[in-house]
Length: 135
Image: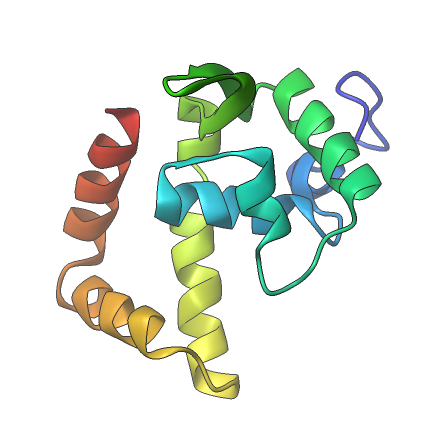
C-alpha cells in the first residue's frame, strides 16, 4: 500500500495497491455510510479488525489521500476520520459491489433498502450521497 510503488501501469493493479487488501475497503465502506468515524467506531464493526491492522490501514489510506483526520469536537484525545474527495469517488465501486453481492449473498435489511433507492436512480443516489459526504 505504498503510495509511490507501482507493480505495473494497470489501473486495476494501481487501485488495488491502495485499497485492495482485506480491510481498507471496509474502512472506506464504514466512512461512506457513517460519514465520520473514530478509531473505536471501526473496532466495533462486525468484521473485528485488529488494532494494529486498523492503525496500519488508516495510516496508509491517509498517506494515499483517501481519508483525512479531523479534530473531534467533543474530545481532544479522539480523532475523527472522514473520506476525502478521492475516497468519496469510490462510491460507484461500492454501489456496484453491493449490487453484485445482492445477487449472491443474503444482505442486511438496511442495505436492501439502500439498494432499492439505488435501483430507482443510481446516478442520482451517487450524486446525493457524495454531496452529503462532502458536507
